[in-house]
Image 1: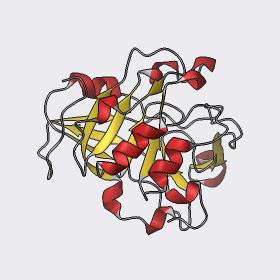
Image 2: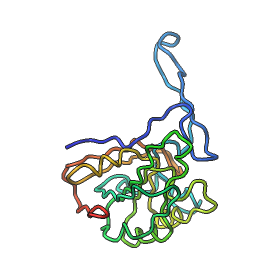
Image 3: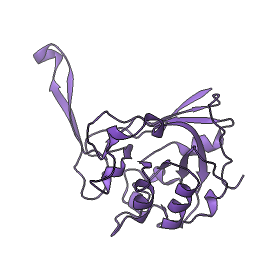
Image 4: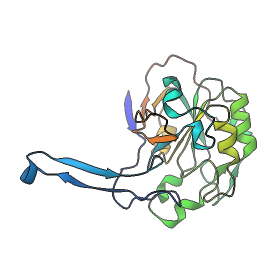
Length: 223
């Protein structure tokens, strides 16, 4: 069994979605001055690797702490969407064989551009793809990009389709290429900070590869 880190580091000046709060970290207390080290953090709820709660798009939808914990962990299938050109739409075709109850991770390969201007040019899910995932019974979708919609976006159709069905979305994942290269079942953990009423929160996303999981994992796209 292998444990794979799927999270980007949280650090001062890291990339943020256009318009989101900038991230800064630095010493609040130090051993030399205060006897202990305490790091001060300033960041938004969608900084780095994070999950979106339904409330992200609508005040009437559930907040992060109102969702069941099984939205954030469970058996996963990785859909291989690598090799697409910048800003390419990902339609419903790769998701036809996805089974209910799995966490779907979309590997675009775009995490290699993390920290560069090209990171905003990632592929994205079409509204039809998001609607198909909802119809298939999927309630957790992750992607190795800024967003499941284009960046920036005038509207957020994929977000609305998924979050409107009380699903959660994980964004800014990394390391999905390694999951595609591993054999065996995959279990993913996307546990957010416990923030009452929150629209989202950073996560330490990790995957266990080769572990026995409690539900059947669907095939990888293209397999």
